[in-house]
Length: 113
Length: 113
Image (cartoon, rainbow over all chains, first blue to last red; front, side, top):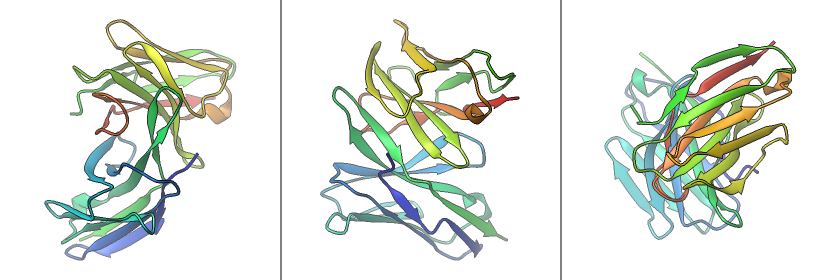
């Protein structure tokens, strides 16, 4: 099942501009995570925001969470060519005895110099 | 370096064959997750193991199976391979459940010809 859905699917910007990606999810959450994936490589955790937090910062990253709208956004400020990657939001799905991170299809960000 | 090791990095095999993918989790992590990533399906959760026990099953085909050994490394077995099984297979680990940060390996790229 696909819990999170990112929007837009693709985003192209110039270096120095800000990039905003959105994620919508379906069920209630304890936290939401954002990951980055460089082409064909493993995902890297960026930030985790808990359901009782509205905003969180990490370096040039700013994440917001609106649980009433079941949505989150990731803002990358002053983008660099090295930020070119796919970005995924992930939420936890509960199973009978375990849990798993369920990912959306991602936003592909291209930053040109 | 995430601390999660996956072998092999690349695998090319014929339809109908069986392969085994291996994952060594980050030191101290008890949970191991397997994911399949393809262009059309995105990142699909397959299965979770926690401290040697299967805990959650996602979109894993009956032709696929996994196990986690006492030293916590895990193997994903794919049998009766079909062309559609060509994908990137990722292993991830976390300290406990999916509500914590997950660390991904670099993946095994499987090509079925």
